[in-house]
Length: 182
Image (tube, rainbow, N blue to C red; front, side):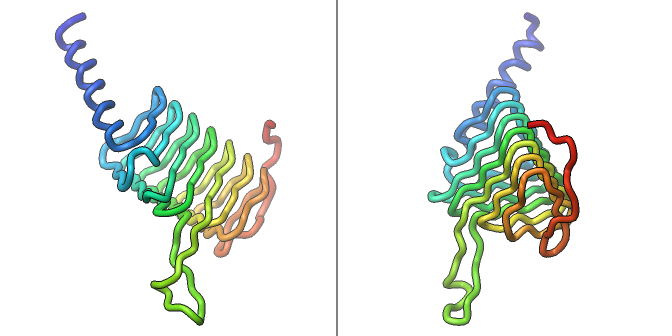
């Protein structure tokens, strides 16, 4: 092995070690691009095998929160995940386009209590083989079924059945995804 190849191998090992200090589990083949920000306890961030995280994604996870990303998933540029509390679970083979936002924790409102004194905490579950379009917003408590498609710019405030296409503000069913393998 040439000196140059040994230096490259050492650099890769060092980069992986630095990443593991920020993220609890990183599966083989996972690539996390520069500019990605991790905020919170590393043990609460889990990435499966062959995950691709593009530049400037932001992962906010609290002591009571958790973010899990399944194998072979893709997270686009400038995506934002907020699991200050609650869990965000992304399935296998999921494609999340740039600037998508997913929240398991958010401020809530009610006439009897000030907005800053209330929060809504509810897990977000994204099934396998889901496509989420650019700029979509997924709010606390949403479950997106296997094979569903979320249109660009949609605001999803309730669960989405498998193999459906949802879009709009607030999101509603606009179609069916045909021929989704089981």
